Image (cartoon, rainbow, N blue to C red; front, side, top):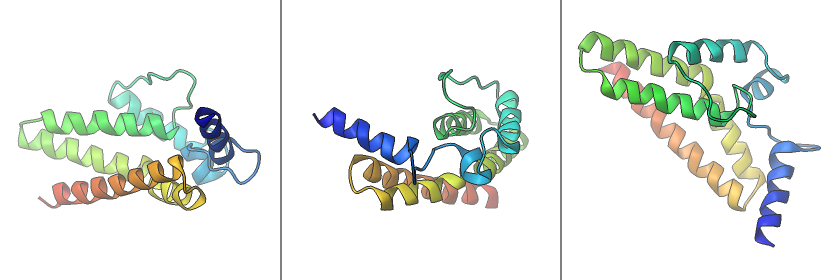
Length: 142
């Protein structure tokens, strides 16, 4: 029964038919699927040799963007030459600004629309993303 309730909440929040919040950046930013946002995301993905593990998700689905952000941050942590660290940090900050920042507003909205599992998860995600943004700013300042 609980799984059925979660499925219904998921559909209501993210799929529709009305007042849903799709976790897809192009829809969120431009109101349409696969806009210019998707093309820019594909450039970042190619630069990082990222291939989505989810063939059924659009490239600019939040899951793909967070996965790619994690890959970029991992690369930042592996660099040891100062110039390469700076370049990797710039890439991470640029990607966050272009493809992750929108998700803070998205997750805040989901958190206000749902007081259940997905709303709480969205609130945690929003807080995490704010911490990441703060961390990226600190790295850029140094």
